[in-house]
Amino acid sequence: MTRFLLPTALAAAIVMAAPAVFAASDKIDEKVAAAHVQTLGSEALAAFTQTGLTPAQKEETFTKLMLKNIDFNELSTRVMGPAGSKATPADRKEFTRLFAAYFINTVNEMLKGLNVTAFTVGRVKVQPNQEVIVDTTIQKSDGQSIEAGWRLQSAGGVLKVVDVYVQGASAAGHFQDRMKQSTQTSVKGQNDRLKQVLANSPTLQVVSASLQ
Image 1 (cartoon, one colour):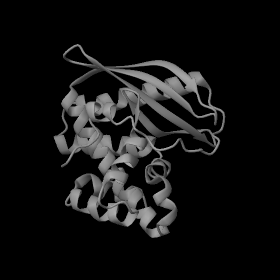
Image 2: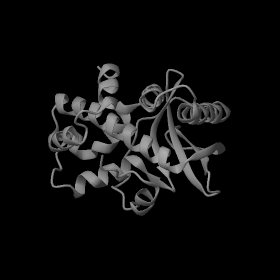
Image 3: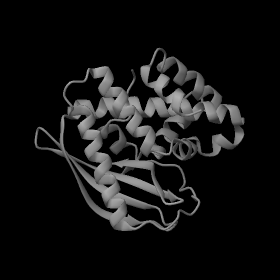
């Protein structure tokens, strides 16, 4: 699988689209947000280190964890950017499904390659629309670390991740920039590309069953 979302790639992809105006989130308690992300990080780490599971079972566990905690409808909307307004509802829905599988596969491969040993929550930053970004440090076995931020939105008291920042770079902005640089800038064109990348992907099967 082609991997675009690596720490160095994200750190280099700082050239973003113009800042989008996001809908207001319900107010989020900062302590609740920090605890939520700490739990998410601990569960993700456990998904990779749990004994008695095959690699395929670990990947499925991680996929279901990401589907539970990330709002892929919102994240994919931010990735599509202006191109989304030109796409049909069916193409937007298809992009959400395909992008979710691609994103999960990419993060899964990235984390496996990092040999993560610890996940620590730092400060919580409230955004103008009441979303929050929870800063975290991902510690690697070689003693180095990666700074990651988790942007949370609340709807009806339910917290969901709507963007991830690695070394300061937004995943949504990174992938939107990739779309603009691609020969296939339309949502439909991106769907065709993602279908090729995700051919025979077990992750896509799990995602398709979840995102109806």
